[in-house]
Image (tube, rainbow, N blue to C red):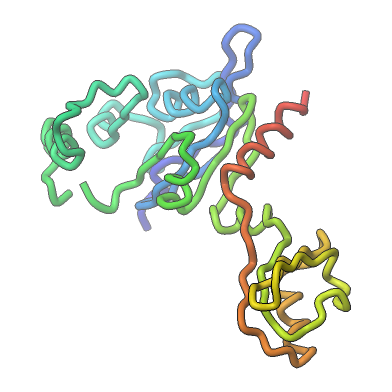
Length: 233
């Protein structure tokens, strides 16, 4: 069984009185595109540089391929910082092949690799990443599979078109309708799930033409979690 490419275990790093990383732990799996999120100054760059052994942690442990970072690992890991200095007139694939060639990689070897993507473009994260880690004030505030995070931060709203009377359901807090020809926006109580509401529709014998749980955009989750973290001393 292959070793986990990156494991961070309770890593702490201080700069004078500023705690840049506060017992941060995470794992980045083989072959995944892993999203690293956080407001400006949250600790993202410090975390990346600690993983790359550019910065030494004050405490905790970082493992690369199942062991502490070794000099030879620098030829196995690419780092593209914000000050990128790329060849703007060249295709991205050509630049990657060129840079990989400098490290002895063949073009047919640039696929199936682990990628850590640090960005503020939430649409890019939703389209590309399978798991995400959000850091704020040096602390972990969000970590896990993107689909689970979106489920846990769902809006508790369902767009549905059926023959049922939604107001009679104990799971429903309010209903918004525009016309009979269009699906209704059914808002559920905080403890209810879309699956429970769908089960209720089935038990009522309602003919369901359309049913769509509405997920909260990642951008909205990002802002909400960041604001909540800012209030924690």
